Length: 116
Image 1 (cartoon, rainbow, N blue to C red):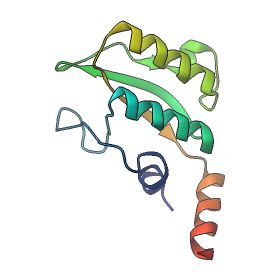
Image 2: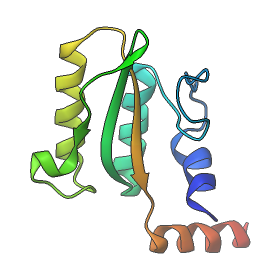
Image 3: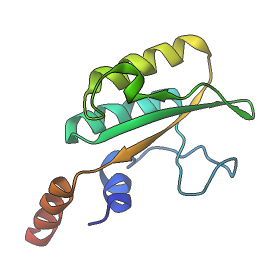
Image 4: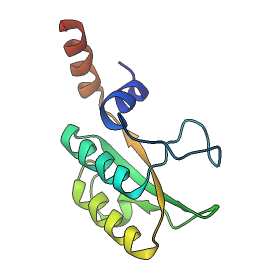
């Protein structure tokens, strides 16, 4: 299983991508409530989140990066705090993130899908 496939099946499943062409097709943006679900699922699976990029009214706002929070990309404390801060800064944002699914997790998912 590839990272993109994992994200589609495990992290983004059932959520509405709000990217209507304002960014690269491969980058998915979500409403506040859907992005909260993305973060919960990322935490559950141990997916790394390197940055959160908010979008509002035709422009990108300040990007939150894990290094600025002195936390590892897999530490949910950084992205939960960043998300709370971004939500307070502006109502009606759409959110995207940069993710990394570990090779170990992808290999485990490949094993599970072969067993099914």
